[in-house]
Each structure stands twice: as structure tokens, then as C-alpha cells.
Length: 263
Image 1 (cartoon, rainbow, N blue to C red):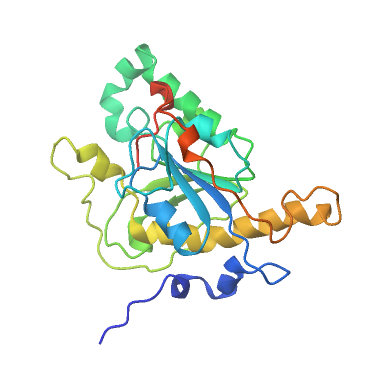
Image 2: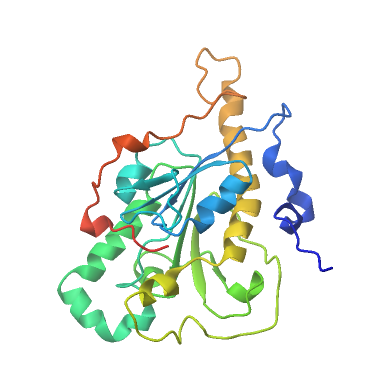
């Protein structure tokens, strides 16, 4: 019988159970926003480890999760406090695969608006942020990425160069380097759902984000609340419950330029 590794077994040895343990020995779920995600892949990976993760998109979630906000990405980001935000802004007007249309997109302002959306996400007052996009103009107009990863480094025998811009987070460590370099995503045939399938987050990458970044975000949270020990305010105190956002307060408030439809 073949053995399928659990999510915890995919953790690097140095970071295994530490993702759910703090100094007092109690588990405190992180409050995480997975922005511009409709598939729920990254949200589910974090929630599988016990964290209070919420996805946000202008589209309903594919899995009909109650832990999904239908609304504006920036409004959600600014509604905090969040311990971290992982965001997947739309790449249609930014990635090099659409370079033949750049002149028109620059002329009518689409690319400029997409770049401003990226800048606004990176500027959010959230301690830990990751922003993901394919190779494109973010590198030349905002800044170069901190890391470029491939699906074949995380158990999927395919190629899809994916850039990560990181704030307060370490680079991802490959978890399962496999054979196979199929350009499946690039070769997808035209169709109404092609953009959805091309932008979908690979499960192996989602699990690596949850396992590895969960530890880093937990350490960041602890460093922020430790100096407040003994203070009158109980905000962020060890063992304090983290209230989820009230989903009913969110309407379909999305602005088209803050379009959250990607993952």
C-alpha cells in the first residue's frame, strides 16, 4: 500500500509542530486574508492547519465556503487587523504572455490601473504580505520579485514560472521536486474558463504556503504581542479568541479596478 504524506509531513523538519505552538503552549489561530482567490485552495490549506483564514473575491467561492468574502479586495485588506495577507491580483494586463496587447492596455489605462492595484495591495498595513503573479511588468514598474517558483518544485510535473513579492515572509522551500516539465497551463485551448484554469493555484504550492509561512507569521505575531504583556489592553493577548469577519457586513462592493477575480 502506498503512503500518502499528510500536510504536516510536508513541513521542513525545523518548522514542523512549531506552526501551531507558541511560548505558552497554546494554539492561537492566525487571522489570514487570502485575497483575490475564488478557488479556496490556499484558504483551505491554512484552515486545515487550524488557522482563521478567509478568502476574498468579487466572485463567489467555487466550494461555497462560508469563509469567503464577496467584495472589494482593498476594502477587505483594510478591514483588519489581519496577521497576514496572501494575494493573487489579476494578471491579464500585466503578464508577458499578453505583451502583444500592451500598447492598447497602456493607452486606455488598463495596465496603469492594474499596476496601481498591485502597489495598493503591497502598501496595506498588514505585517506579512505575499503577492503572486506570473512574469510580467510588475518587475519593471514596481520592483523585482523576491522569488520565482515552479510547480515541479512542489509535486506537480509542470512548468509555470510564478513570481512572489514578499513582506515579512521567507522564501518558500521546495517540498517535492519531481520529474516532468509539461507546459500544460500555457498550452490550454481557448475557452470561456481558460483564464480560470490558467490562474488556479497548485495544491502543492498552497500547502507549502500554509505549512511554511504559517510558522513565520506565527513568529511575527508573537514578536508583536510580546512587548504588550502585562498591558491593560487585552488586544492580541495569548489565548484571546480571534473573531472572524462578519460576512453579512460585506456587500457586493467591488470596484472593477479592484477586481479580485483570479484564484
